[in-house]
Image 1 (cartoon, rainbow, N blue to C red):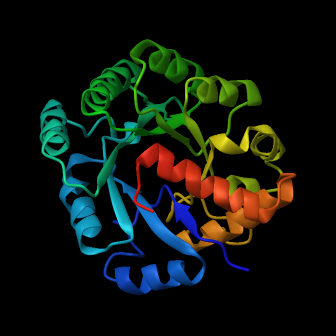
Image 2: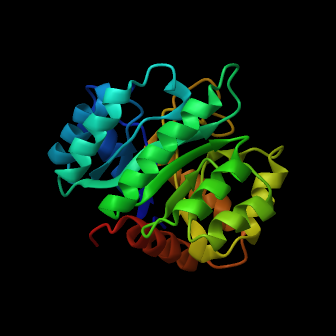
Length: 260
């Protein structure tokens, strides 16, 4: 039985989807994935992501400056982002992908923090949720979120921290993104976190074409694999598949104010 699912994090503006969008959306739909949220990673992708969202009813856009590309982002990119947000299209539903990353060799952490603060301020001003990237940076990120107190909160995507770190984000009103990491037996910590968090705090994601699932290493990840992530989540949790599917849908629509 297929349940209606939403992939809250899919980089659909990258290959292998480029030029094969309609076919890829049909494949996702066949697996029950009815809607996708496509976050941008840099200013030169804002227009393309929005164009996808306007062209395809299933796609919604998020605009933001990804911390991994910190050395590429210019100060003027923030002005451009502010312009897109303040004159936003109805298909633009979040600020993202933004956040902090201490996994890189040269993280330029002070500039990362400065860029994130500026983007969080925009999200607060526009009352938009955020899609947050966090690698080895959960504690400083949570501290920053406590300080700014966003009215619309958002999602901590690709979460692989401890249960207490996840609970800190949930306490602040944020959802936690459940992705392909839980398909790996070795990811016991993450699997336990996703099993123990309140169901009301979870949303589904793939991070396609990144974060391939177990058995698909070396291949581009795809939005239809959200169905596999969902099935694994059902194995990890005590609720029925019907309850989990309904909650994931409700949580996503609540966080991003998506239409039913």
